[in-house]
Image 1 (spheres, rainbow, N blue to C red):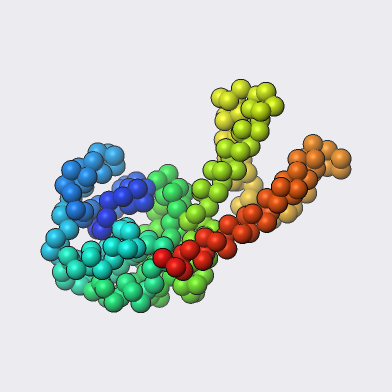
Image 2: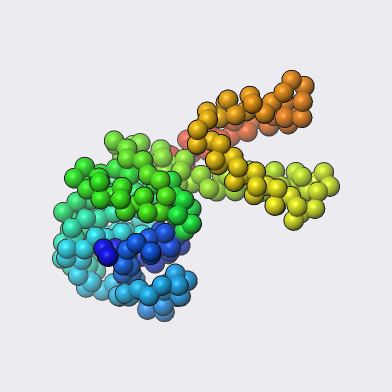
Length: 252
């Protein structure tokens, strides 16, 4: 079983490790042994745990899951040269990664929170020689899309990386709307979850505009609700959210 070495033990690292633990041996490198112990407990799988100082990365496949601001500090605590570095750091360029980390190849990846349930939408770009292995690795936690430039992955970060938060807002708001009209909270939540589960399957094979047309009959309930969303500039707000998140990614 191939070994993946996580540098960092935060929420994203845990989500990815949850998706990989059945197919990969997990090593985790961090600053605090107590936090590493907690990581292992939450993962519910035996892992190899190491402290950051002077950790030897020679011939390892690294998965970098730290804060972008900590790149220089963390890199100074490592020694050796990795075979490949997979980075999930938003807005952190390949040039910067290669400047601070000794590695034969670098790949930027942007998974999302659904990695923990094997359903991440992960976008990747970087060293083309590592493309096939990168796709195999991240296919273990969902679906993948290889992109041809770092600009594209920064845009994709705004869409797929941040997307779960946007959809969570929509899900909560729709549930609140049903409760406002008199539906019990538990029922509203159950119905909303069923809605998202079914829609997730439908959208795989159909353009969203066609799905909307299939539901919206003339003068019907969907048309009335849809008009209210347009009046609230929901479409514009979604477009603007991607723009703002993309710009933030480029400024990190």
